[in-house]
Image 1 (tube, rainbow, N blue to C red):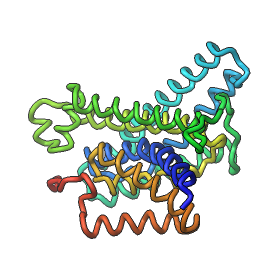
Image 2 (image 1 turned 90 degrees about the horizontal axis):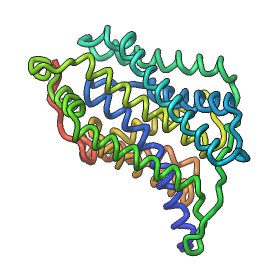
Image 3 (image 1 turned 90 degrees about the vertical axis):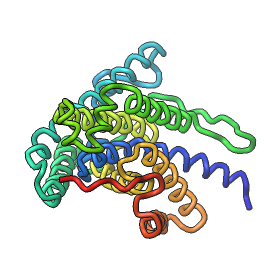
Image 4 (image 1 turned 180 degrees about the vertical axis):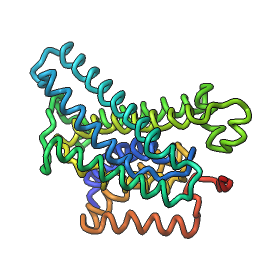
Length: 305
């Protein structure tokens, strides 16, 4: 066995898994609190890439800028993508999902699919039907890890994703708003009786999930070097699979599922064949759901009324 190739693919899997994990957090947060599969989340992630592309273009950012100016441009780009996507998530929740709250699950599910298609068409009208180059403002030198080269952008993706996951974990576990989110996810009627503003808490959940999707969109744009209006469909579907695999509703499980899916996809593509990667991903999901329906770290949730 070529051990250098194995280490290289492990690093690639870690990088891809970090991206899936960040997107999966949005799925699992929304499902955990209102039991809705928000199919539009993947498109919010793509929209974050588009907003970042527009912001970098507006600022005239290039890798030849002075370091301070480039850092300023990247900070503005991240803030613009995260805040605009956060606001987008809140608007989607307020006008598409909230009026259907309490209805049978089919209605909000179909609405989520409709919102997803609407966003895809808006993005297609905005940037066109073809992939669009994303400004490569960060250099990507390779560092030697033994006989294996690791790209700087891979380290940026992994590090930034872990920072976002840890920040979300501490927010949910260590703040009053995070406690309100956990109480609402457990039993929103009881939480409302205890004085928690349910509408505000659910809107906050959509805001945070969409902020993470926006940041993920910026990171993947910088990493892959192009964006496409349909990117969110595949990435969102696989990230949702990661959330289910890890235990839907569990943020730690979503992160774990993202990394597992990343490794499975990369290893299958390398050692079996690229065309079998998605087959293997969903086969693993099916096996996990057969033998552990709640996912790797999930718990059986009580039925909502």
